[in-house]
Image (cartoon, rainbow, N blue to C red; front, side, top):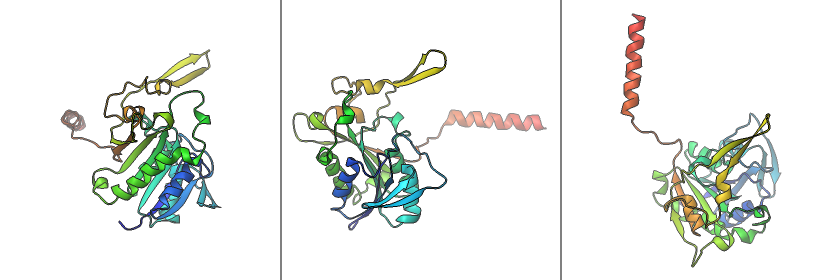
Amino acid sequence: MDAPRMLLTNDDGIDSVGFRALYDGLSTLGDVVAVAPADDQSAVGRTVSDAVELSDHELGYAVHGTPVDCVIAGLSSICPDVDLVVAGCNKGANLGAYVLGRSGTVSAAVEAAFFGLPAISVSLYIEGGDDWESLATEPADFAAAREAATHLVAEATTEDVFDAADYLNVNVPYGDNAGVGGPLEMRVTRPSTRYEMGAQRNGTDEIALTDGIWEQMRGDDVDDPVGTDRRAVADGEISVSPLTAPHSTQHHEALDEIAATFTATATAEET
């Protein structure tokens, strides 16, 4: 396509460093319309509001709502003529199949897919540790994510990528983990199916929910197989997972038989 017009959103908030990094990078390719949450909306998934307030911002528009609110408001009202949607850059990874429905960043891309637009969600993988929130505080820290996003926007939208995929979920390694042993490479992946959620009762009235994967986010601890998103970033590669929305379904003969049996039984009882 010619110079694209893009809706840029995120879930960390419109003033986040990662958002500005993508805004500056994508602006070199075309017109960027910023429609992003006014404050942090991390992990809200596809939550949608009945109504949202809109504020002018130096980059575009700050929405007092969720990332999905931003996409709906943007594509339905603010900038319905955009060519694609980009979400990010999120500070923190969005890896694994179980995360896809929770992430506000990824959910923005999913919502765009329902509008029939190509979308890309971009996140920065920071290894686990107590100090992760103090990392990636400068625009330069998101340089690789910015380059990956601009490359995919420039190249994937001119090929047949979005004939087979509705959106791309991109995770970029950060810091010492990036490009281990050489230049940073991009790897096409599938979401890891590993699941480590659990719960533990604290006393009688509270149950603590824990995600064991976050305790195993360091490269040496990740044992996901080659070809998965988490394995790629742990190895210092940019992970790009081509995904569909809604989730694909398959013909299921066993379920056909169950449904047919129910229909026959119901008919017999009525007569």
